[in-house]
Amino acid sequence: MNRKTMFGAIVLAIAAPGSARRIPPPATTCIDGERIVSRRAQVPDAIDFTLTGGKTYRSRIGPSCAHLAELDRTYLLVLEEQQGRRICGGDRFRLIDAVAARSGGGGGFPYCRFGPFERVTPSR
Image 1 (cartoon, rainbow, N blue to C red):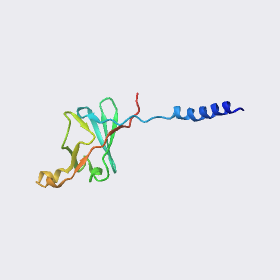
Image 2 (tube, one colour):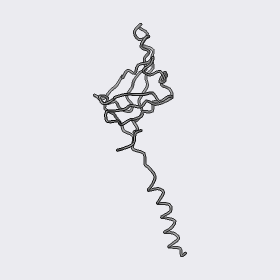
Image 3 (tube, one colour):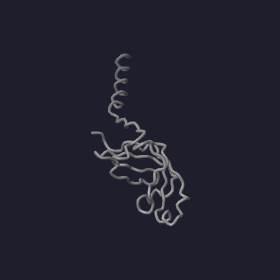
Image 4 (tube, rainbow, N blue to C red):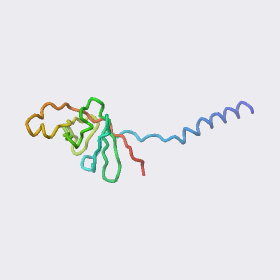
């Protein structure tokens, strides 16, 4: 095999697997809060939001957001910032113990921030 043929074979061998690789969809900055059908904590550091139409987006929160495992059982998600009806990466929220908040002890809950929203359901 001459050098040109060998070089061509190497280029094809390298290029073929790359074209078959799946490139993950880019992270989205915001989701429409009015289209949220459900949300589910993905412990220890993320929340999945399913929108009408079946698309699901994951926002990585980070481990510093306490009580994520108790979301919607003991703790409620309360938005502190929102861009109209959109929820965006960087927006602040709190996880508040509903019982403590009703009894006047709701002031000590730390802020958390949404990360970018990544698509976790396949494209159609």
